Image (tube, rainbow, N blue to C red; front, side, top):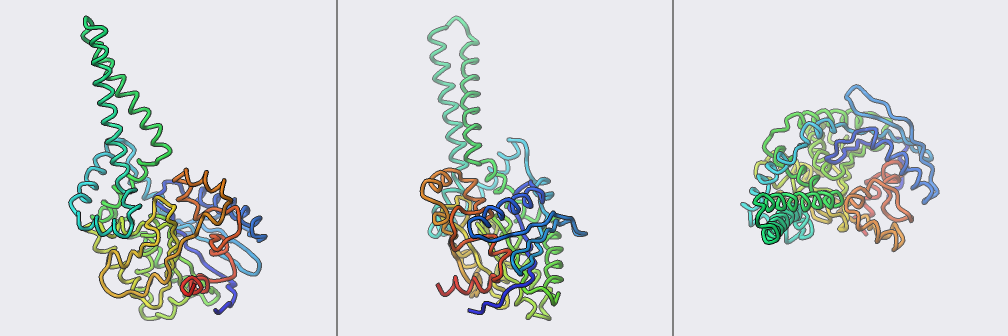
Length: 387
């Protein structure tokens, strides 16, 4: 394997469907890089962040002889604009999405055959809230009946008891939801539907702007690697930007040899399999078939929010593909002792964020070495392919 050291790298990081912005992700990177450095005896010098003309935030990471320009791609403003705050709005969007899914039984069987656990994750918010609603109605009926037996002369007491029972069950359900994050998932499902129907035009404009920035970075002679990272829902954005970059560089395809794409905890099929997601499927096919692009996916089966080890090109697009070059798992269980990992596995949200965080033990997956170390993703990815 060629081990030419990367001296200068430009990372474009696309976060997930998260209303938190650059300040949060800069703080997360800085604190977790320091923690990872103590595990691997590596120094990561992370600068303060600054904002550039395109609205993105940039900071530098120096490690040994490698300098990385780390650019947070802003789309949190779009997330906030499409983040329903009222329970009724979340409910209405969710009903539409689940209606679409249930109308496609063949597709559900196809997804279930390759990603059964993810299919469960898609439907457990609906099952959970239906269960809460049924429990609330059952509690209301039982309590109203008992109160009617005990106090038959008070006509309004049964209704009051029923209302209190419903309120208590819903409050308990909402409290438990904070650890299950069902409302977050439902918001993502609703956004996937809006995106497929072309109702988020500003997002397409954002990916166009990102592709322009990637092209400029690729054409800089002093840049050894351009790394496009898409995390969670951001994997969809990274693939769209990669396809648009390939079109911009059609006359200079060799420029793409410096571009690598890394998706983490990807959920691309959630967006690409929507009936009207024709543009995204075309872009996915473009990236899949482009021999100059190098795409690696790293998603964990222990991550409830990802299509782990599922090739999104094979699942969503017809035809031959060379990408992704590798579908691998971070093997989170090897990065912690057994007791710590057992605790982490109970926190679904934390497991989904672990791709961006430090481990307790050194291992093959190291987000900070991958984004700021001396080896390019192509060098690491070739190892993943042959291993």
